[in-house]
Structures are given as C-alpha cells and as structure tokens.
Length: 461
Image 1 (tube, one colour):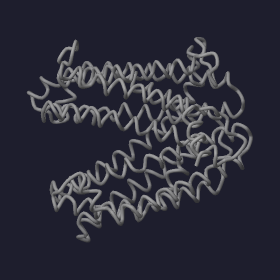
Image 2 (cartoon, one colour):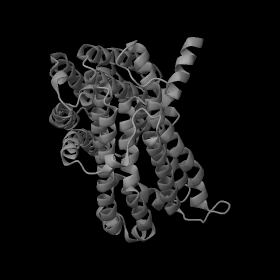
Image 3 (cartoon, helix red, strand yellow):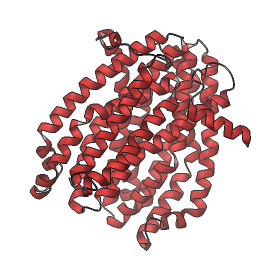
C-alpha cells in the first residue's frame, strides 16, 4: 500500500517523463493518474458555471446552453489540434529530438492563436445572430449577447488550453497539464460567484460574470502551460524562433488534426441524433437518458485517462524505434481499462436504481435512466478496448482510421439502428439504448482487428 501511495505521488509530481523503457504497467499508472485528474478538472468547468448561473434564472441557463452548443465547433478544432500535438510531440520525444518537439509546440501555439482569433472575431461580431439562430427570443438575446461575445472572445484561450495540454501529455509531462487545469478551475470556482453576484469588491455582472471568471481561469491555465513549456529545465523548451511559421509543419499539423476534429464532430452529431429520436417519446425519456449519460461520462473518465496514456506510450515508443513495446503498451492499457469498466459495469447493473435516485425521484425518469445504464454497461467490456485502441491509433499519427471507424459505427450503424429498433420494430427507448451498446461493440471489434494488423507502426509523423 505504501509503495502504491509513493507511486501515486510520483504520478502527481511528474518525476518520470520518458516511457520508452522500464515497466509498462508503471508507465500506464504514472501517465493515467494525472490525465484522469486533468479530465475531472475539464468537466468541472461546465458544472461550476451551470451551478452558479442557475441561481440567476432560467434565461441565464438558456444563454449558457445555447452558446455552449455553438461553441462545440471551437472545442472540436481544439480537440483535433490537441490530438495532433500529442502524436507529433510524443514521436519527437521518443526520437530524443527535444528541439524538434519544441518546434512542433511553437507551431501548435501559432496555429491555435490564429484559429482562435478568427473564430473569436466571428463569434464576437455575430453574437446576437448566433443566439437568434439557436432559437433564443429577443429578451434572451438582449440579456445574453454580452456573455456570448465574451466567451467567443476567449476562443484563443480555449483552444490553447486543449492544445498545450496535448503537447504536455505528448512530452510525458502529464502532471503539468493536470496542474494547469487545477489552476484554471480553482480560479474559476473562486471568481464565478464573485463576478456573478458582486461579492466584496467585485462588480455584479450576472451571467456575464460567469464568462469573465471562466476566461480569466482559462487564461491563467494557459499562462502556466506556457511557463512549463518555456522554462530552461523543462522536458522540451519552446523558443521564440519556434513560433516563426513553418508552412510544411503547419500543413502536417492541420492534416493530422482533421482526423481528431472529425472524430469529435462525428461522435457529437450521433448523440444529437439519438436525443432527437428519444425526444419523440416525451420529456421524461429525454430527462432519464440525460441523467444516465452524465453518470456514464463522469464514471468513465479514468478510462479516457488510460486511453490518453496509451496514445502517449505508442507515440514515444514508435519514436524510439520500439514498435513491439508500443503495441504491448496499448494492449496492456486496454486490459487494465477492461478490468476497470467491468467493475463499473457490475456496480451500474446491480445499483442502477439508487445511483439514479440521487439525481431524480420521478418514477418514469428513474425507470428510463436505470434501463439505459443497465443496457449500456453490457457493452463495457468491448468499449474498454475500443476507447484505448482508437486513441492508440491517434497516438501513432493515424487519425484517419479512427475517424472512418467512427463514421461507420456511429452514422452507418448506430443512428439507423436506433431509429429502426425504436420506431420500426417498436422497441421504444430501449431500442436506442441497445443501438449504442451494439455500435460500441462493433467499434471495438473493428478497432481490435485494425490494430492487430499493425499498419499503424509504419505511419510517419
């Protein structure tokens, strides 16, 4: 137990960053822990904002919801660039080419700022039109336009927070990425109520205060990341000359990022379609489904930590010319993930009712959420491998293959199957839930087959 605690502290401190030798299990643990905690911090941004904004009123919540739905485009670009950054930086670190890794991060910063400014200006100028397009009434637009402007103005900080985290994870310094999110969220938690309600010396800004607090928090997180990436004793060091445009590297970075962006958009769009199908059965069904999804997303954060760890391990070991170790690392991470999700699945299947009861006591809502949880968890053993191996492919620089897998499984299978089972065969909401379990299982089978073929080992980045 003492040894495990010491290992946990080592993971938080980030004392090891090169994972091309030594115990693979140790490497997975050291990378996964800070990545899991980083993801918990990322999820807290939305939770904290909604918690305090809800005290203002329904229109304030609606303003945040409508703005966040459009902001998905910004998040998708950020996630795509982050995926590319992890693949490129981890490969250079594995090659022991720290200078090359620094150049990659310099171009990541340049591209992130450029795209962030473009999207920020568009969102700032057309804030009212965005809210109107999303169905907001004139009163909501009048009260919420400034919030939307402020959030879009922070687009460079949003994108940089994701891409620099990806760069740090790729370098093996997952603990620095974790600390940057801790800092950003800590500041957001403190400033959100202060700016919203005008506590102490702070002005009372209402819903606008949420945007100000979030922007300040994200900006401080980015500044910490920049410090970690430019300090002399860092794993990699970004110099001012690294930010000078390198058209070839930028083109390569954008090419890789398209895959990551597409994967996020494909997944997001599929959930929107599923919600639309479920909405035909009434608000209780949608509410139950929403509760179940939020429970699932929060509880599988450790799985995403292991999947991201696999991406870094694959990238670094391919760079070090050790494809066998890269492959073993991915399979080992997938096995660990399977054990974790199996435990979660058993808990969900047996304890679904009391778990859902913590969120709602409406009998119909609880029944739907419980059924959703129990059906979803039947596919967890397969999902464990699908999550890790697709991220491993991303880490190898093969971002196109996971995109194609997602399109086939989510758009080609999941959505049509959900409609067919729910409406054509009259299964109702369970038909939608089964379509998710089936498509996730299919995704895992395809990912295992493709990964086993080993073509990803020959991808050059």
